[in-house]
Image 1 (cartoon, rainbow, N blue to C red):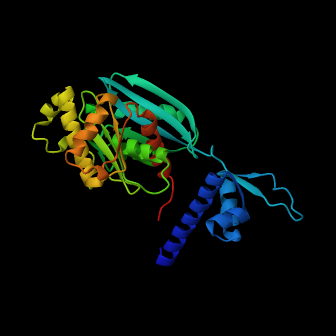
Image 2: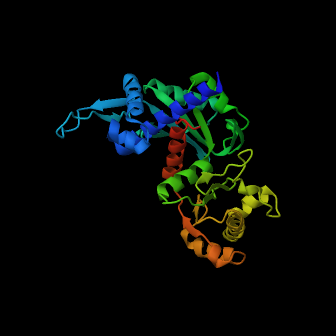
Image 3: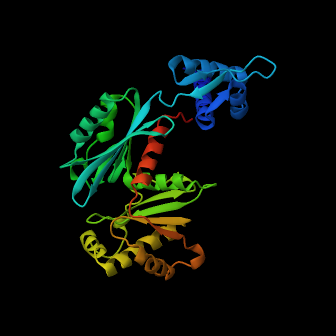
Length: 336
């Protein structure tokens, strides 16, 4: 393929994405209104709309009310043209579970469920997906949140032992031939928090979790972008140099004094490195009554003018799922 043809294909895909995004955002549009918002020509918008109509991704509505001339055709994005499946794999208090959301193409939830399981491995997840796909037409992408390190679809250190070291992403992509997004739970949680905050401009934000009987973790958004690191190891805050073994660290986190000490060290490190506007503290261990101690503990090393807002939220299911759904839908968009 020549470079000219290659560029033409890229431009066409970008233009299609622009038209779809305008319809998703506006609800209903005419060729003229879509052209105005996308800065594309009316002819180009018409060609793209006809192609999307042919496959059912766009619906033609009754014509706009006449205004002394020929009525303009109106178009709406067909949110039920397909769907995505999002799974959150969790282990809390020795209980393994998978939470599932089936979401249409504009992010509306059409089904939610949670099931507790005696164990979770690749076969468990695969069977779960098979069941979901068999009951839903045109599944276009799958997203899976994992409590562990994930690099190019391969799971590393993980709180679910049977998933550690498994190439879950490549296996599912080969079997189902649709985009598979597998992400660390904290990265998706911070992504969900960030989108739900609805910031007017790009901000730097962090989430740090202190779960019971597991090591803490964190997720970072810097200037509006998730920071995952070279091998997606960013956020593994239990590996900070606390001057003790990780086993001793886990023991101390489950005592009041030890929790405050280690949490302050963790928060101070995050503040000094990325300077966030806010940090959401989550998990089973932190309590609202500890926030003041955590804030004052950070002030021992951080000047007050650089202190972020500290907020406590123990239940982060909504934020976690929001991040996973957003990332999974984004896997369907074309980016140059």
